[in-house]
Image (cartoon, rainbow, N blue to C red):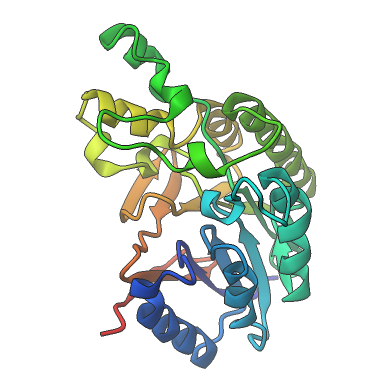
Length: 293
């Protein structure tokens, strides 16, 4: 018996509350509400502070299956933040807010669509420098400490200033990769196909396109702060049931075939928003942009 079809809509990097993107955000919300999918997915950097809940509230009346992963901006806190640490946000506060607005929090559990033989698996993903640490050691000896301070030759990554928790980058990466592996085991046991959705790129080909052939120090630093090899290898080891991989974070559109898996970086930016509409199981994808002019 043929499985029923699905319309899946995905977007990322709404950065709700940033003024220069709000016209585009509202145009995108209007479109989604007028053209409701069967499944709606958000790939992180949803909104800052109280804007996380405000953004999800715009989709409260959207009558479909909804799921999300947070982004690094979603867990930013100030030194005296009354909400607590970044870990408090990631592990407790954001999941509760997501549930209040009918969103499944993928970092906690995969979403199994039993009628369709499909599971949606993912998490925020993080970086442990493994995509470039060795290259920096070889080409820029003595500069590897910049990965810890997140200081480029010009400027500094704000994760250094606003991600505050008991973890370092490598320990948090180990933790979420372990959980991700457990989630993939669930899918394997069910015998389902899977879509992977993350915020930070899950596979290297979906990272910053300009880094492909750029070996400058700043380029290698960005590469090291974008993803990790362990999660990428988990996907590779389970490629027989992973159909597509989706992410955000870099604000750069990418579409890549990788070891039989179709990968997409959604590519929203601060001043415009982009969404993908995917039909399942045929995998056909249409992209739409919203500029809010």
